[in-house]
Image (cartoon, rainbow, N blue to C red; front, side):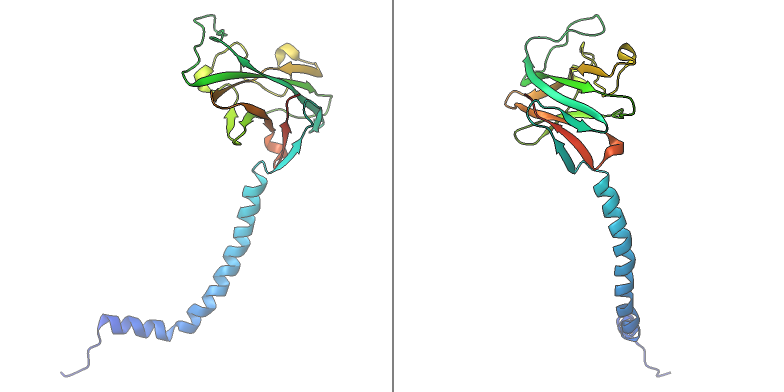
Amino acid sequence: MSGRRSSPAAAGAGWWRRNRYGLLALIPALMLAVGTDGYDFYRTRHDGQPTQPLTSAPGGWLGFRGARIRLTQFARMAGPLPSSFGGQPITVPAGAQVWRATVEFQVPAGADVRGCEMDAWDGADRLFSADPAEIAGAIEGVPDCAPDSKRAGATAFTIHPLYLLPTSATPRGVRIVVPVALPQYARLLPG
């Protein structure tokens, strides 16, 4: 038999040649399909991130989610921190310093700032979480933007979140994020 044999490479080239118009038509269809889902994905990710700041005047009140909030001061804390568990004082790690914020709230009925996250930021726009693991259990406790059982029914209260920053950093303010309010968030500047 003296039939022509085609190589696998030649057979593959023939397939591409036979299907080139179908493949070209597939490109816009894929772009349309991915573009719609891609836009939805982008909107979901964008709206789920704190991208729209509401910024207070230094030491001034800021209206946020029906509440009024202000950052009156940041103070550096010296020495070991008292433990809320009645045990040994908590020692601050070398190369770090603890800052204590004073945040005042006025939360009338109907306002909702529960479930907030409070972060400090420094001059390099780095974020630092309140009550980090290195100083967990300090007397101040984990901050929350809603009245706790000790403040039940109170519409005005003050909390004191603690932040652990490198000794070279100085906090510039507090960022309050309430997940249901995203993409808006509060940026509080100290007075």
